[in-house]
Length: 198
Image (cartoon, rainbow, N blue to C red):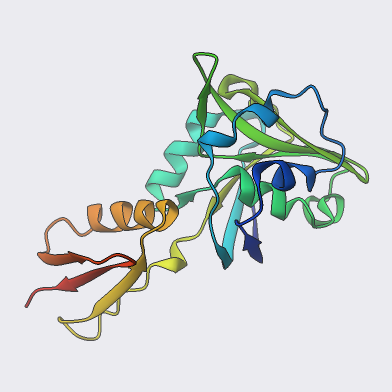
């Protein structure tokens, strides 16, 4: 297994068409243009990512299991499109490969996932069934859970989370790993406040 880590600024505010168009060699006939409703706009933020490759054991299901075991957050296609603006040949030390977003969608009654392929300087986005991603040149992208920071210095420490889908997913994974503790959760229009009870 191989891993690569990145910290980049992600802008989740563009339209789906503009986000996909970052990958300039995307086919106009790709189904990826048809799934905008599955991946709504996000926000602008700095994100820590980890990309994972299992070599000959690559599979989408293995990647999801690995994320659960390590409390990683599944990535969106918008994450992958932005990361693909880096020099992928240099970053992954390979002149071709693909980078998979790990939040799947349902399209035409099949579970599918978005990915970015690169070949030398070319890169394009596409959509395929999750069983497609068993090639050893593929990398699966996750967010590291740095967005959720709860101090252990005080039993009354408080963490505020923006209530977007990605951060709520982080919270769900984190709270599951602290199931033997008791918390108060208060929701406002913009944030969730998580307070550990004494």
